[in-house]
Length: 187
Image (cartoon, rainbow, N blue to C red; front, side, top):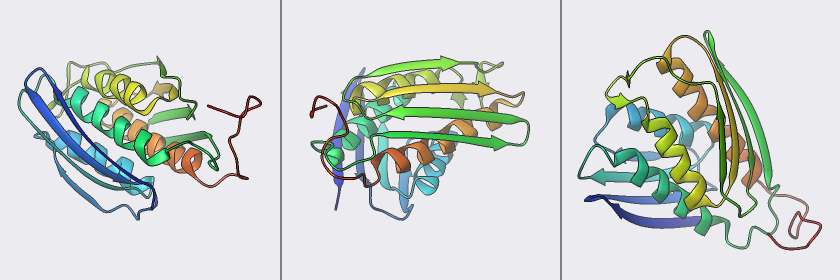
C-alpha cells in the first residue's frame, strides 16, 4: 500500500491528511468549507485516491494547510518515486469550463496557472484559495504542475481543475516500467 500522512500547522490553523494512492475514491473530509470538501472529494474520487483530511483554525489559512498536507502525504506515499510513470496529463470539461493539468512528479516544486476566476468567492471559498491550495500542494508534494483554465462559471472552472488534477495524479503515480524515469537515474 502506497500511503502517506501529514500534519501541517500555519497561521494558527492545523490540517491532518491521510492519503492512499491505491485507493478507490473513499473520502472523509472536514475542512470547514463545504465547497473545498466538495472539490477534494472530486479530486479523490476521480483519482481513485482514499483521502482523509481535516482542518481547524483560521479560514484564511485553510486552503494552504490542506494543500501542503496533501502534498506532504503524497510525497511520503510516492517514496523514492521509483516505478511510477512520473508524468500525467488530463483535460476535464464541465459544461462551458475546461481545465487542463500536466504534472511531473519530479521532486521539483513549480506551479504555472494560465487563466483564472472572475469573482472574489466561489461558494464559501475565496477565489484566491485555489492558487493557495495548488502552490502549497506543489511545494509539499515536490511536483511540477501546469494548469490551464477557461470558462465562465467559477464553480465549474474550479471543479474541472480538481477533477483534472485527480486524473493526472492517478496517471503520474501509476505503475511505470520500473526504476526511476530519468536519464540521471534519480529524481
